[in-house]
Image 1 (cartoon, rainbow, N blue to C red):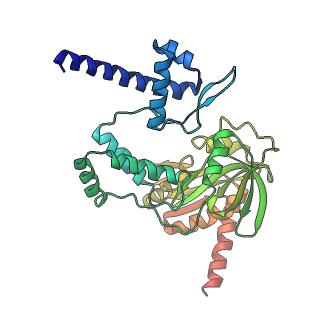
Image 2: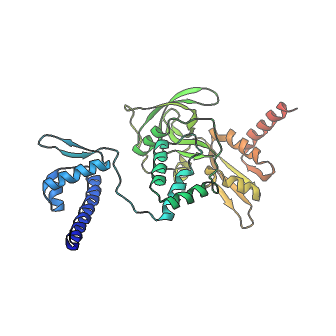
Image 3: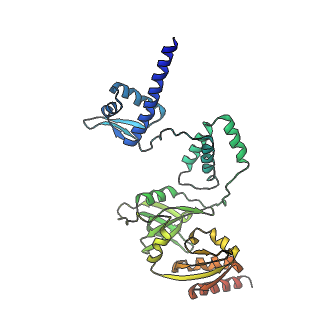
Amino acid sequence: MTKAVIDKKDETDMAKTQRLLELLMTVNRKRKFTVGELAQEFGVSQRTILRDLQELSEWGVPLYSEVGPHGGYRVLKERILPPIAFSEEEAVAIFFAIQSLRHYSALPFAAEAASATSKFYAYMPPDVRERIDEMRHRVDFVTPKRQADSPHLSILLDAAVNQKVLAIAYESREKQTNRRIQPIGIYTQNGLWYCPAYCFQTGSYRVFRCDRIQAAVECAEAEPLDLWDIHLDNRESRLAGEEKNSIAIRAELTRVGVQKCEAERWSASMLTIRPDGTGSLSGQIAESDRDFFAAFFIGLGREATVTHSPELLASMRSYLAELSGKYP
């Protein structure tokens, strides 16, 4: 075979590869299409498009055909993303970003995260894999190990993203209740998962411990609220004024107290830090959260001094009296 023939063959193969990659991105974008539409868009014959679609199927793109006058091809829900070129440093960073989740006993996408990690590792060059193996012993993302399981994270996240109402069985400290909620999102803190949601039973917003949700199913007959503009980043400021029964609190914090409050997600909108490192915590809290804050401030000990409110101080005194009785 002459050099000219080889060069021409290489050019043909490159053109085909380029077309397949562009076709992959096109079918992912369209999701439904006909062979004729693609042939016209790419300037090739329908027979060529059919061969290309067959190759995409062999790559793992989930295509299926529909017969009839309005038929064509569809891409199944779980689409294959087009190839993305990562630098070595980017690939390592993504690998360890996924690895940072490995200490959690529950994730809304646990199987997918494990699969993605496996793919990243398998397709890396041997020297990069050796580097990762060494780094595994040098870097970790420590999360408290919890025995509590949260098996309903996926349905909670789906409900938050798609504005759905869920019927849940919730086990609080006192009893188990059945509720209808509309999740805003889910987040994790100190190894536990939480779900802020609108509770139709109380007519207010609440934060639910996900491991205490014993069952969760979609409540299709319930009309969801319009909560599109409320999410995890703005919920505290947006909902502060909507709480029907709230009390104002204020506490002075030492430097250590500030550091401990910074570790709490809910404190971001309430915490003020002074140039010398001390600070204060002030804002509105739900009446139903008073016992939580009483225990929290008592846990800070000398690092916090609550100056307001009378209701919170009364709860703290009651809590301390109960502790004193327990340890006479």
